[in-house]
Image (cartoon, rainbow, N blue to C red):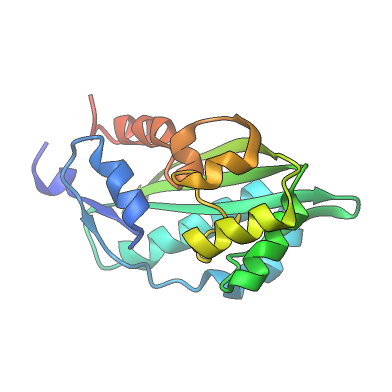
Length: 199
């Protein structure tokens, strides 16, 4: 297999995703996908959480695939809370006030993080969907406020980072820890093996 056949591009500017992928000891470059995720939100109810996550990951990958002969690896993560009227999609809070509000909405409840991963080149695509169940403690408003003030998880869909003191907000976590951070490495390894990029 030529070096060109093994070229890998991570369709993300996330430091967390790059650090996770680097654990696999494969050379790769990172590029920002040219894809507006939020313009697709209207498809969530139609597709459902898993298919919607895959739709977004595929959109990110395809936005870079047209200009490259490399393998493109893209991922998209959703935070989903089951409500009486169906699953609700949670967004990156953006402000401290919304982050605190979101944490208080999640406290004492179980939500899902669903991450779709797509590996594509030309007409070939491999994909997987990974999910974790996370149950939060019934923490106080003061604890949520202190956490947000110190750690500023404003760009995280759940309004927390599992990598910092955010872990203290949880009672139970089920699933691949790396998937919670944003790139489920067990699933990624399976995709890379399917493309013969890993033994």
